[in-house]
Length: 429
Image (cartoon, rainbow, N blue to C red):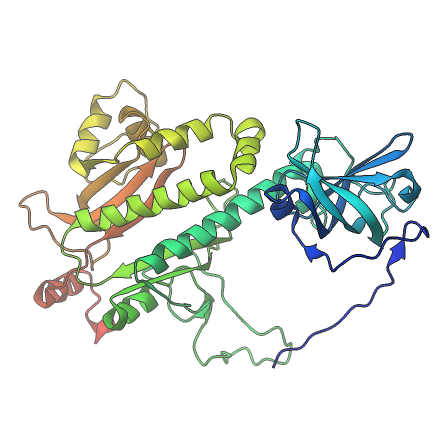
């Protein structure tokens, strides 16, 4: 059952001057208004928050933003609309004509016929100040307001666009989206430290579990997707995952969103790597195409050089090297690594970043890892003394590992042998 709660607010007009009565105004977002090709006086309604206000002799200039765009919409109004209620941070509804702007800074502007204040804002008490670049440490004190800033707004729009692009990518290729459980009893091969879920009631008996078994916040939806892939061929999930590692590094988060996919009937790593490369490029191109101003702001103030690096990655095919080749490159490197690279040891982040740099800052697939480093279900390459499995990681500049995957071992007798060697036979009976 859906429940709706309505909040009625009295709209206060900024002027008692009579407004001309016209036909109904179409409601537009700021983004749509800025991109409108119809500037012949179309009557529109825009709602948002005042980003700046400037009063001249007989003209009032407002810049309105509703979060749909980094750029604000300029509103030009008669000075009779001027009021104390029109202040930085106030929410307003503006109705008027969308016309071509004489200024070179914007293509269109809104010639106001009616302005109503939805919510007042005391600009002096408002913690976010006009034209001030607030540090992120300061904005953390105001989680309910920080999304109004350009930086946080741009990051969230980019994330929203990337999320939509990921879903579109899989949908266009026939994948079925699966909602895997957030609360689960499995720990997915020990993928990370677990947050255990318990009811908050103090009357709970300590010897009993709410679900009759211990329950945890998920670290991965992989096991559920593997079951689903036996019925739907291609499945994916994109949801929250949780790690309870007590680490304060940039690479460790208590909660983050992860894309996971399973594909049946894949017989070689090349097919799997193609999906990874296509997903990366489709998502990046969608963000660059649909969020150009947000990307430019991030490029200028948050991560200088990243936009150029991303465009370079999109122009080139990703490289492929084996784990053995990667170790040879690292051993020959004139670089003092904290962890000495050796065949049979896992690649560290410093190794991954060096390999990408060595390959011309182009993403690189590393394939065929030693069997001992990977889970029992990855397909045995049966390649003699080295003994590797058909696994692959995608390494990208700055980050290191971004994607990981493998072919599954489908030969039942080899799975039985692997389980027996790992002491897991009884657990799977």
